[in-house]
Length: 134
Length: 105
Image (cartoon, chains in turn cyan, brown):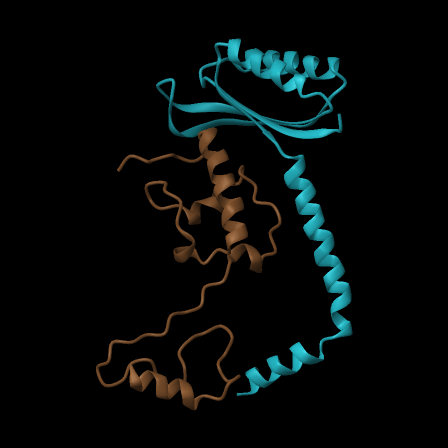
């Protein structure tokens, strides 16, 4: 399977001690490494206000991970772990590589167009000038 | 309405500025209820955005109503493609409680 990029965000209860969150992150990292995947980014966003109540809580501790994996199985394993952890109130995994591929494709196309533009500016350029002059 | 049309006919074909704005002759004459709508442009196209990040809620916020509903294209002027990406991004953000599904009044 080709390599895929995932975003994994989970929210812990705000009263969880930081050490416990770190421990949870470590176990997740371990599971990631075990399957030959990579943690590209790891960010602790800290305690943020939730947009709506989750498990009767109004705020939560956000942790964000960007993963690069060739095994979709890994995501199932990570989500299973998050589900059984009581401190985690919500999690979300998003597959991002297709979006990023599209972004790169559009970026390349834009570059090509920009490179090609000087060749035939006459028609577009002159009408714009006429419009500006009036 | 006839007044309006005559004004438009007088203007040279390419004479209208591309950004819209008040036309020569003025939009409001002799009590006729008429106004010139400013042409809205897709904000994402202007900034050449190829990927709308669901994590940047401050970027998505302007496209939401006060109560958290997604604003339609006709209000914001977003192009079809970017609106499509935008709704996906907003829904992802809603899922992880970064944005509300429906905010309390």
